[in-house]
Image: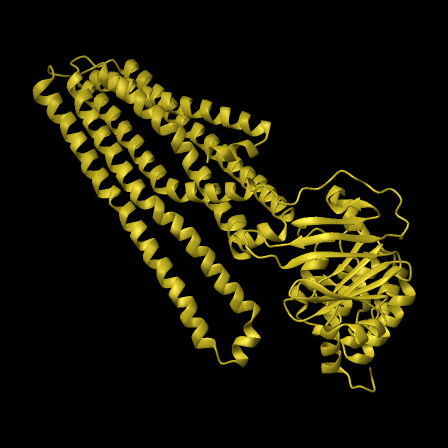
Length: 574
């Protein structure tokens, strides 16, 4: 929890200092009030009542009460603002950190867990700061101060108070040790609930088409039941503290009365009232401590999970090289590249070497799982090569600044991704800053003009979250238009034509060749027709490069390519 304080700004530390100051003032006023109460009571029950003295002490009591109220309001306001600012800073830090994660880090945490850590865990920390920080500061000060007042009066009261404190510490320690592992489990189970819910919403059409509603309900019910049982166990353990505290507090009150009546030298009514007020302050301090210990385990678990994200070292570190000569002429060289996924034992790519010159189209084909997508993901550094190097214009991609590298690349993933907004905001995504003509040209090249014009508002037509209001082929074409609008030096199409019919595929590739003649293009495809005209076709099989050349060359000297081609085309078409 303390590690999170480093994400506060300097002004927040001034706010904390102000909170401590006002809390000390509030405690001083609360503990001063019994002194005036004692004097006033003694005056009232005395034989000669001096009304001016009664009014004077009563006035001081009112001043202390209103001063304490004002301090409490100021502290509540400052703490609420501090908690909100810390929560804001943490959300920014966690979100920014996740933005810098490579696929390896994202897969390590899982998407559902990262969403939960960005929302639910930060809310738990905010809730603890908002309600617990004031108590965390006030309770020790109040307890120590009040105990000091009692210590000065009677060692018997000191012993009875010490017994209560020791019993409380032992009880709280036992409860926290039992409950803390359960709260850790609760957060992990909450991740599972989020994951199952997200899967259900994402795959709702498949679920309904498969009549799998009952299966999904049972799957959700299983995790929900485990989460409920874990929450109940943790809640019951924490609930033990309340009756135990009531027992201790009642016992302490009884001890104070009994000791005051029979053991300590006879006291005045005012003195007994003062001591009882001090004992109630101690009780209130303990009650505040209970509230802290009830909230703290969950907050500690959440803080630890947030720190796990923030303390994660990025596996892909940006370089410092910035290419100022952005001329659209880029060559790409793979030199003895091998790759295996983090924590995996086997390599998925083995000793791949080839060169793509400026303006060439390089295609990759092979069976499912042969490593095609993994290979091209090494260019934009979604992963880094385990062995060997990838060069852009003679510079290792690991040496490039991320912004410079990303500006060179127009990447279209295997699954088209659209964001909530409009056609314009999706095609002109990020920092493209393309003009109206540039956007229309990109959409035209991507063969998306017809359906965009039919959407009603043209470029300003709405796009739903995830592109659910457009078809798979339309989603792919808008994703391709987005890459074209960037005017990059390198295009990467990761099976980005799979949802297109053959006619649209051919027209798109023809227009793309004319529009991006100087750019280097990498195409992953399953259809021979998509890559027949490529300058160089690389055939992969189980992570090995088993062929490289043009279509005519491979059809004669590469058995794997022949097998793929014959499964799609007739002898006459070949």
